[in-house]
Length: 112
Length: 113
Image 1 (cartoon, rainbow over the protein chains, first blue to last red):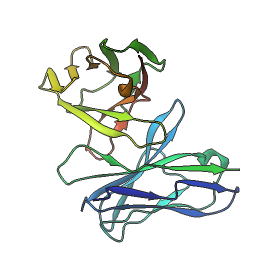
Image 2: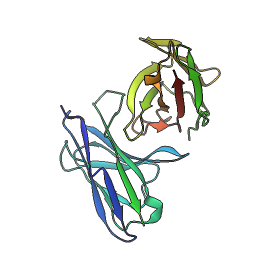
Image 3: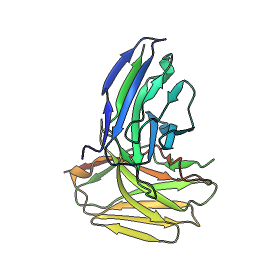
């Protein structure tokens, strides 16, 4: 099993550009989530999904969109990138009834 | 909302000693608490979970305690090794629902030979 796979690993955007961060898991986990990690702020939840077709907002959802059309994939879309979105983004999944999160290796995003 | 405090200063210890990391939380008492390890450039990796009715949990050289009166968890690594050097994060579920796990900022541990 590959676990949770995130692409790309690194990305540089200009202000106003849009892009999609990809996340896929092969563990048949119903729950998937996106966190951002900033120095001194810890991991903050952006959006999460408890199954295909169901998404909800986390602590810092503004400027991000998600959708969940399949169990395996949970892409995160930046509609119009801003320098404040410079961060490291982590995707995580969890089995139904489980409590521990499985994280991907992260995407380091810089918005200039 | 839940607030989690972990020592932001790095903890430096010598190989072979016991490392003790602290996680303090405010407000409500969570049903459980988790500890994760994060290496530079990598995602967090789950280590241990302790429930509110458990005072202590062990896994190999790791030990976690949970004091709901003090609102504190202690994470111990005995016989520490340089390979234990990493950032350690504690995480709690929110007071309502279990979908939004909240993380502390983490404490960096440096074990020198």
